[in-house]
Length: 227
Image (cartoon, rainbow, N blue to C red):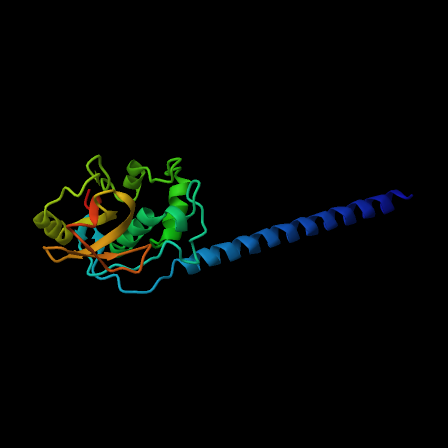
């Protein structure tokens, strides 16, 4: 075979290889683009956020929070550590609602929702083996939002303290269930309190809007939005 023919075939082979490589990269890029578009679509949620801001370190209590359900089709089947959001994501979903009310983004993924917050927690290795959030890791979102006093094993806040904290720079997540047996409890974002017994919530698990202070509440997570 003539030397020129060999060179021509080698050149043709190189061009084919480059074309195949370009096609593969294009397919991967398209697939990643679809994934990114899907995640971007997930970021869009309805409902007013209110006046929650974090401008120059000054926090303003939001008028309202969005309602997210942990078993939503968008993220319910997503894995936390070992369980799915639908199975064990009541606290994480409640926090996502709180962060959304304060307009705290989940960088670099976008607005706060259970999908983005869970993705961030996984990327930060911020779940325990029991699917609980590692509290200290949350300070990367809002410096000082978590401390050793954030978790209250019991319902140890007075009624007047709850009222004042709801007016202040806090995300308050209560644990509700049978307070005598402390079984089957779950977490829900607290949005209001009448100062007597009725605690209003955004419940990520059940279609309830209120629980009783006297018989249903038996624990707290308090997140300080000004550190």
